[in-house]
Image (tube, rainbow, N blue to C red; front, side):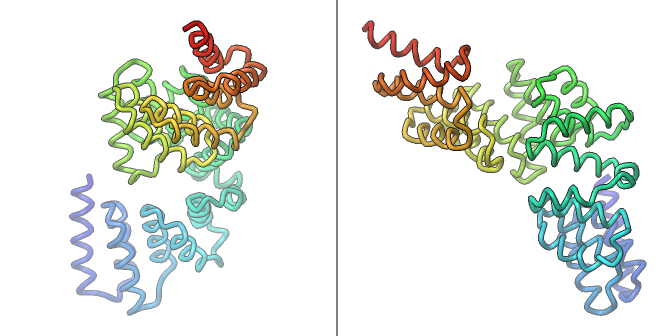
Length: 338
């Protein structure tokens, strides 16, 4: 398919050389470039065309979409905003929402999504659900997912995004079913890789995650975290720490990612770095038992029994079944018996 699209793009470009002022031909050529994933060339084509003729909304829109695929949110916003007089157009409104989301402007993105857009574009429903999930609004995200499932919309990327939410809502059966419907979408592949990890299939998980990180140019934090877990599985704690760090930094406030990074460094013998990661997790949320429990383990391993006991006690108050707190207490008991 890509080769066919590339051939069409090359053919239309040759026609455009002969007829450089043909706006309709330029738009067809730019669309073919998008289909062929030749995003830089699409932007260059549009810019060259606009130097010699009046830029059309169709061309500006296609250049904005190309910028989105390249991850250039501000460039996309700048181009789409020149078309703001056409804001009633749902295609443009969706593209603007997509650009705002890419720029991390979540509220601006959701404000553009209305009922008509949801009915017209399954991508809009997917974006809305992804934003609610990203912001930790799990009740809202769950309600949106149930609404989409009830509407029986078989849209692969939406299924892929919902599979990730299914994992976070601790519904593995639903997550697995949705990932199967999500095909090779990056989110679906990450969900499938997590099941591979649970099944001990490290090589299969690694294959999927490498594909995701290649396609997303390393901008998929869940894939980085999952790959870090694969590295831990296979005894490569040093690499695991680096990957988990990248995933945690991209997520920002994801407690599990920071704690996992800390444990990778602790296993690798880098206790100072591990402590920094555990401390950072505590600054994000000091009511999470495993953050205190993880710190308790590190303190116990350093022979700081009094501090470790206090940290373990806090963890146990927050969660009497805390595995890290129990582990820290076992280390303290073993030390006292030796």
